[in-house]
Amino acid sequence: MHLLIPFAFCSSEGCASALRALRLPHLEKLLARLAPKPLDAGDEFSLSPPHERALARALGLPVTDGLIPWAALDQATGDGWGFVTPCHWQVATNQITMGQLPLPDFTANESQAFLAAMKPYFAEDGIALHFDSPNRWRACGAMLKDLPTASLDRVAGRNLENWIPRSAQAVHLRRLQNEMQMLLYTHPVNEAREARRVPVVNSFWLSGTGSLPRDRATPTPMPPTVVNTLHDAALQENWPAWAQAWQALDATECAALLTQLDQGQGGQLTLCGERHAQTFTAQAQTLVTRFMNLFGTQPPSTLLEKL
Image 1: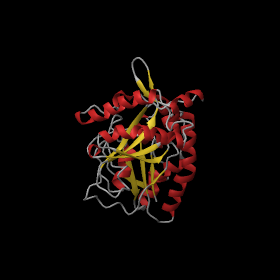
Image 2: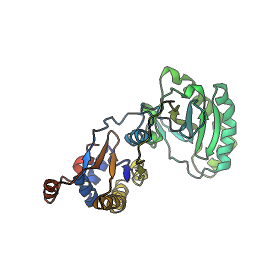
Image 3: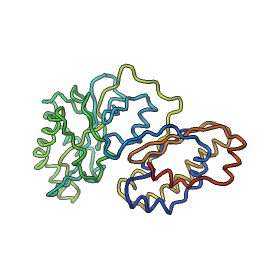
């Protein structure tokens, strides 16, 4: 078993305060039993967050910032791919903030109507749009092969200033976003959404761009299980709910991994914050190690707050 835990810590005083009161006994025992691998160091402004980088490495995908080809992963062609997410931008005087994701009360029929209206504009730039689900479409086109984009987990509920692509190769994308804002402003579906008092769709977000390399690395023999129970609370900055979710995770998945280690089976744990990711692997328990563990280890908070 390989557990990969996104948002194990966040760069927020509210998160740090919640962490100080958090007790995670199974995680503490795991950290005493597992050996750390080299830190995957980054910063909170990278386009690809640590949990996506860690998962990409395990799956043999390239880990170029903003170009982990998630949308291309299950496609037959080698063209550039990306995910298009219909969204609501909250526009204020000094900033633009990404609204709630996924969009509330967003039906498949509404999504299909927006897709049909937007398709011709994307086609002018050589991008074909395909429906995946109401909250996610798939885009295919040559310009997406080498266009870095920020993960949705970076922008949800946040000021978009640091994340909107501004490179020369993103000129067409920025023009498309401007055109879609004008197109969607008076769209009948948005008029109906306004009548229902739910957020209108006034833009889109592009993510997961890139293409699969021909010499893709071999995936690891033990693919990780991504445990996303901390995700929603972290993005909503609901730190009491985040702490409660951590305690539940500790009592279930962490306890199960500890039981597996007790049975002599292998195991790995990857903890991901907003900046760094740290993987821990099973190590042989010598008599000295077992004796030292009787005296306890540093609390998990000491490690988590460094992520």
